[in-house]
Length: 95
Image 1: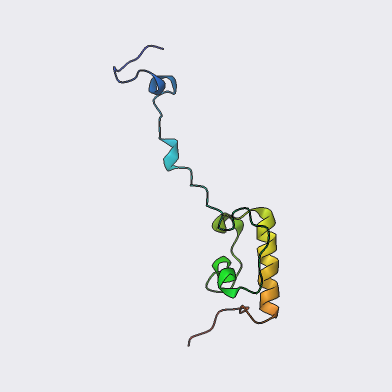
Image 2: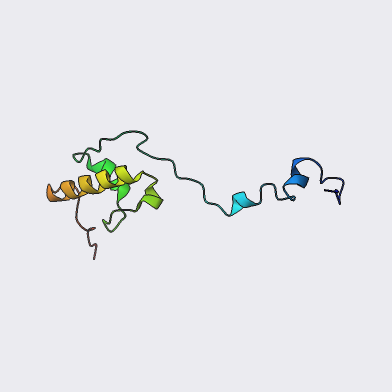
């Protein structure tokens, strides 16, 4: 491939001059807050509130960044904690 511009040599010329353009459009992968941990403690309400929004709904995986296995364990732990009244089912109404 012949370089049209003197700066188009090397890797930039081979890739068509598109170095670094795709990074702006692709979202960054979320860092998993649990890491490789497989146990989710349902008795820790402060930890479980990280995975619920202000209305009390369970946040999806794409927002929290956990794996599918961990998401199922978190959802089950939140439901257990709700039945034990450690985590509220809905947010408090301040009217």
